[in-house]
Amino acid sequence: MKRKSTFLLTAGLALCITLGFGAKTFADSEPVIASVEWVMSKINPLSQKVSNLEQKVTELESQVKQLKDQVNNK
Image (cartoon, rainbow, N blue to C red):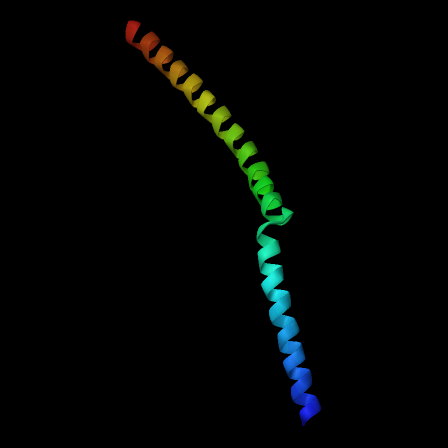
């Protein structure tokens, strides 16, 4: 019984120490930076696509306006 409780106490202490140190070092380590870089790598192509689509919409609106002007002038 004493051996079992000593083992559980030691395992619990080891787990607490591991989680305590692990949590502090995880916040200061590279995975946080890597995840920001991953998000930025996903956002940048979308931003470029939106910019291209906005440009195409502007061009199409201009063409529609020109066509309306042509129809009204006839």
